[in-house]
Every structure is written in structure tokens, then in C-alpha cells.
Length: 114
Figure 1 (tube, rainbow, N blue to C red):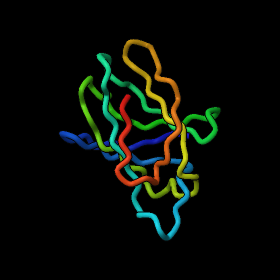
Figure 2 (spheres, one colour):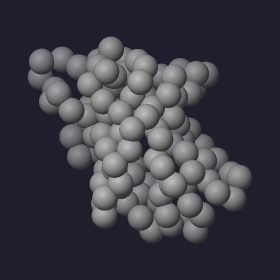
Figure 3 (tube, rainbow, N blue to C red):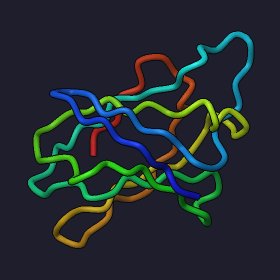
């Protein structure tokens, strides 16, 4: 599963997902997004997402998320078939990865600090 499409702005990056996505009900907004902040001293090179921590998809974040930067990541509507609850982790330029953490991506105003 791959997440592609990027538009980097001062504080925003629009990302789409090629394969499976998040389940949406009529009560939820049509667009799912979250804020990702890099609180480390190493650039984030990849952001991975998984329903089961076994198959990981990824966001194409272009050249990465610099230390101290914050971006808004938007899920493509093609992702509406998966559940809202997903695991997320980041890979860094120094070769390390964050521990996977579970989030509800249907939550309004979701902010993730890496």
C-alpha cells in the first residue's frame, strides 16, 4: 500500500493514498487530516500507517519533514474503506524509527508529535 501525492506549503502538505483508506460514516467529514510535527533533531524521511502493524503504507512527504517543522497531512477519499483507527510511525534521516502508536484519524484536530 502506498500513499502518494504531495503539495508542500509553509505548514501544509496534501497527501493522497493510492490503496485502502479509512471507513467514514455520514457523521464524519469527507476529508480526514491530521497535523504532524517533527520534535526531533533529525529530519523525518517517511511516515508509515497500518491497520494491523504488519502491512505498512506510506505517505510521500517529498524531501521530508525538517526538525521543528509542522505539516498538515490530508488523506485521499480513496482511503474511506479502512477503519479510522490506524498505527503510525516515522522513519528518520539518522536511520532510526519511532515506535508505532495508535491513533483515531477520524478525530477532529488530531495532532501527532514525532
